[in-house]
Image 1 (cartoon, rainbow, N blue to C red):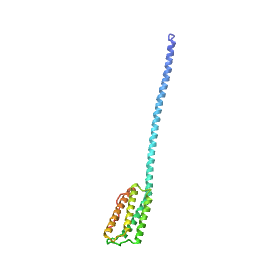
Image 2 (image 1 turned 180 degrees about the horizontal axis):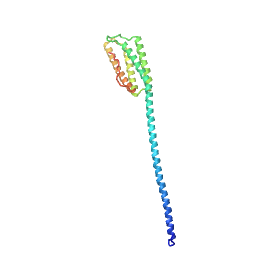
Image 3 (image 1 turned 180 degrees about the vertical axis):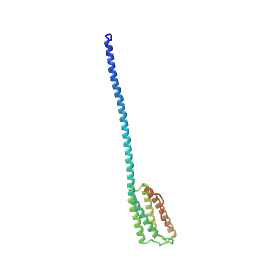
Image 4 (image 1 turned 30 degrees about the horizontal axis):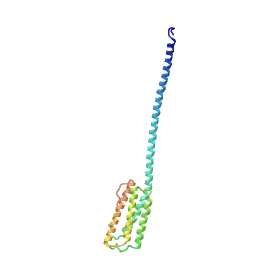
Length: 202
């Protein structure tokens, strides 16, 4: 060092060197911290996306399992209800006169058969209420109420009167329409195409 250089100048140069070194270290630390922060943000976003994807996959799996479980629960209940309705239809078809006016009063045996068939429909209807869709449950209830009304009309007798017999047949045909509505709703619940024939009393 030249003897003519002031001491303060030497100290200033040394201080600037130290400050430069410190500044470089601080800047390096800041840049490194920012890289780590970006890396952490990326990892957090990646983990969040992975978690969301796995959650969606689990939800879809649960929904598929729920659908399959509901389908398994509904199928035997719907089958039971339709079987009991078919039995009711058969009894009505046998009790109502085919063409000519019938007896003034329905026999006690036929009354019993009608009542037993309707009671079986009621039991099957009650059994599916927990698992059926709202539409199917309502359609089943409408069928049962109309069937009960038909049962009362048939049991009241008067089938020897052509006009009364005609009215009862009209109500039975209307009940067949209720059955068609119920079948459509059941097939929709089970993912089946519509189109099942129903018997109508002539």
